[in-house]
Length: 90
Image (cartoon, rainbow, N blue to C red; front, side, top):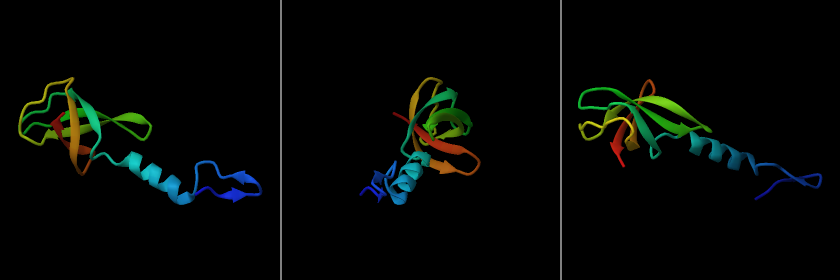
């Protein structure tokens, strides 16, 4: 549905549509990223995840307690406090 105000269409649709689009881009779970700092069993690493129109760094743990070397594509399966995610190789 598009809003019409004095003969022109509201750019970006309704307020609900704009809010849903922004919220979907801010969710990290389900996004794929790339390991930039080795992730290992019981060891925190780093991943870069495309989000909010850019790419952001997150601390990362392995979901399977396996070592994930830098450069590996990963899927974010869970978020934890303080910009930390749990990932698994794609």
